[in-house]
Amino acid sequence: MPVARPGIEMKRERPILAVPLAPGREQADPVVQLQAGPAVRTTLGLNFAGVGYGDYGFTPNAAPPDTNGAVGATQYVQWVNESLAVFDKSSGAIVKGPVAGNTLFANLGGACASNNDGDPIVQYDKAANRWVLTQFSVSTTPYLQCVAVSQTSDATGAYNLYAFSYGTTQFPDYPKLGVWGDAYYITYNIFNNGQTFGGAKLCAFDRAKMLAGAAATQQCFQLSTSYGGVLPVDLDGATAPPAGAPAPFINFGTNSLNLWRFHTDWTTPANSTLSGPLNVAVAAFTPACSGGTCIAQPGTSNQLDSLADRLMYRFAYRNGTTASAAETAVVNHSVKVSGNKRSQVAGVRWYQLGNLTSGSPTVLQQGTFAPDGNSRWMGSIAMDKAGNIALGYTVSSGSVYPSMAITGRAPTDAPGTMQAESVLLGGTGSQTGNLHRWGDYSAMTVDPVDNCTFYFTTEYLKASGSFNWSTRIASFKLPGCI
Image (cartoon, rainbow, N blue to C red; front, side, top):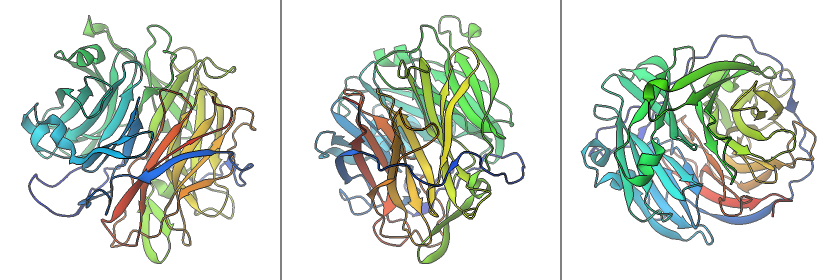
């Protein structure tokens, strides 16, 4: 999304470039969960301030924060627009930062070093024990994706640095990166000249070369304007995908999910293939707010953006987790809770899928979490090694300030249901000043050491206002994972 030129100090709302949605009528949601299950028997861990207003000397100059983060071997890295910080994951103590994101690329030079344009993603490559940090450079052309791969598991150490170009026409909006065995896969919503939707772009970066610090290339496939908001697969857990398995990608259509499989051949790039989409029918849904703005807050008529025109990051994959499927993945998006008295409420639709890399993809279970009259949106979802699923999101209404909350489920719970909600941090302010943008994404990740502890980060406000957002980082475990 367009940003101000470097060197200009101004507060700015980063506009959303919307993904076109197919027209459709409002539909009743047949899998909506209007009552929560029993209380989540959550074991809470850390709960500490992330980068935000008044914390660690930081003052926001843009909104939304695009809150993202990941947990590694000993650290937690969080990146917001437009600064990052490193924390000790056992204590929450800050180790480094906040520092401007483009300082990562000082040794690379060029636009990645001079432009600090945001849309950041933090990943931890669990198999290699390396950090993968990325943001785009779009305030000058050519448009670039700037990628830093750590040389060790220490996020404060040295990095291998890369800039991948998309030319002067294809504005690569909303980059989302996933880790797979043969590549780092990334997706974009392409807007030609920053204005006209050109379809999703799916790319692969040469992971082996980047881990070695060698020159690396990318391979890309451009989809038509029929498809946007595509997410790449992201590997969790100690078990690798099946040998030679292609990387799955996903988006949603009308009452369906679409799945692609990307096979990359680094030896003979002409042999790389993208197959699909395979259409997977799901329970009927209507995107929240018709994809736009309608989330209520206390004490103001100002409403928040649902970002319901796309799936929410991550598309989190595990192999060998459940008895019902060798490989599974979870993903979520925001939907309208239709066909009942809560019809103006947004809920989180979530899916657990099987047969991701071969055969016909299946929906193992699905549900829409909407246990009361509050809206829930901006979710992120993941699964631990025991098959517990954790879902984090923001909850808000005309009487509830935007707050940080989670729910979860055990493998033995009734299919399609989540347990009772747990509020990790209650907000104490509404976003005002005609500022509608909220979040863009949050992050639920799983500790790669114990494969049990979830870490969730998102935004909230300490007091009503604009450009005064804060963020929080919290950890917790669900029962049965040891």
